[in-house]
Length: 169
Image 1 (cartoon, rainbow, N blue to C red):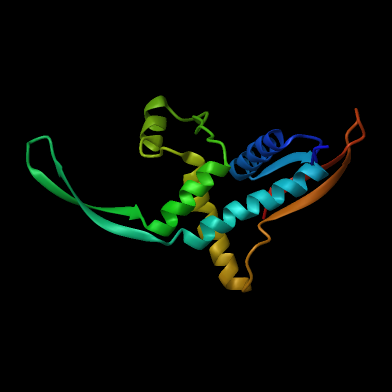
Image 2 (cartoon, rainbow, N blue to C red):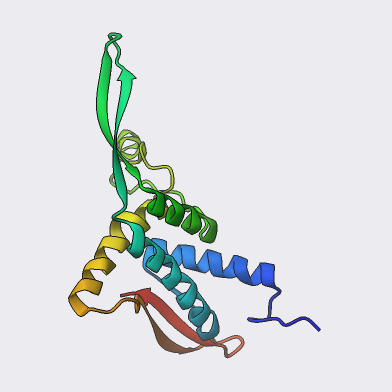
């Protein structure tokens, strides 16, 4: 007999965890059942820990390009180091890609300009927003982890399932 956690087979369970962790990291909080929240908490904290431990690993590289006039131009570009690149690929395996949304007061040209250099918005948000925030918190409090919290909100009306909100601290 197969063991099923969360009442689902392995591939379905991992798909649910990836989906909920992706939305948790994108929006900052989601509402789900208590059991799923506990599973997502572990999954999401491992992703954030990967980013926190490697986001500073960058390498400066000089890149030569040809401009519109045909002149060779040397630019200094900051690339991911090997540790950060590996962490980025691991995170990309664990989360679904979420598209950047155009804001209400933003024109299409402004949206295109804002998002032209971003290939993977969720991964960029993890490395550029969450990793520095939680690394600073780690240095101040001298302990890592504890990036999320679960708040129990009561039971669902239809099936009486225990509900909770999981949010990033």
